[in-house]
Picture 1 (tube, one colour):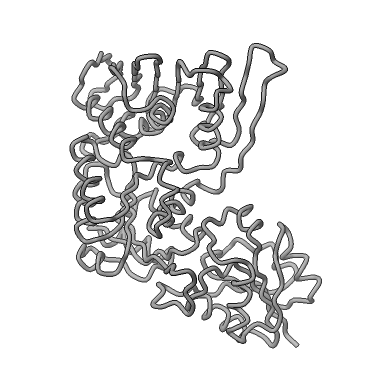
Picture 2: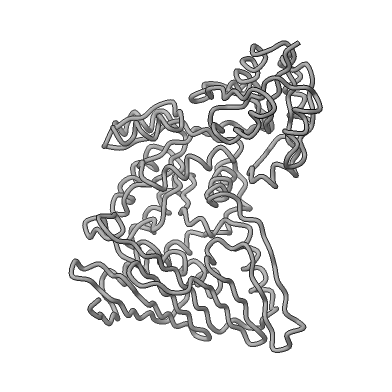
Length: 450
């Protein structure tokens, strides 16, 4: 008898799950299905699982395809199960291709082509539905986003839009998407929500068209480069009862939110100063250095330190000053932003042509918090005091590229869970747009040659 095994969360059981189990069953005589626990899903970075473990098991039972159902609850169990049950074939969806090659020493490994798009669900629990998501743009960040979507329950990445149809096809082919197109009307007709990953200067028009077409929007940072446009878009989203969220991934990560809670708890007293730095060295013919694409250190990177500043000190600042190094093409390659509040100060440093330590330092009247580079992927930080015996270290898991956290919160908001909305409020995004716009207008700016 040929034994086959497969694993998954099987949350919000749908047609794609059914087809995968059916094809797995056809590979042999006896099918074992491993269902992950909520704790293991969380450990491996699976976000937003909705159905309970027992509901997911029951949905698999109802298919009549599984000869045996087991529980997966720890790392390394797949290999243990293959040996324990005498498995001949391990199979999983093709979106995991290459991930389980190490199992080939123990059994045959088969990657089954995933269902491209989900036309219907077999079972819908608690009034949730599968959100059909599309991407506008097919650059580097779009590929990372497509990889992360599979870790979030309740969403399916359907297709991609790009005026460059060849670029759209490459992304669609790699991630087995249902469609790719350069026709925006066709694109909007096939999705419920959109992730905008196009060049900065195109964001405003794409956001506006998406909202007018009644689509929820998750837009890459900086959302827009003009504060009046930011206010206009948030008003449009509110009037149409749609979700508009800026994709600054740090805002949604567990580590950063733990950091904010500790900083605001009084552990370091009153916050008096923030120093946040984000630099990376780039060169050549790249978008970051292209003036026609609104490149530069501020537009590329300032959203991250400004996020830390606005979440800790708020939006009511008194003044902002800039010191910047500009090259012959007009690109700022290193910029220091100094923001003054009534009772605190903040400094953000960003650079594409100057390298500095990418740390975050939060100074208070009773101590300080130090987050080492890269602080925007907050995995650990230390609260430090005058008395070293009172110092505390905190460690928090950061899964994958970090994009799955923003996708998960985006889906939760679409499904009416407003408790996730505090992580990046409209007023926070408006603040960031305002500071960036003031820099682009060269307000209160000292310019140095690079």
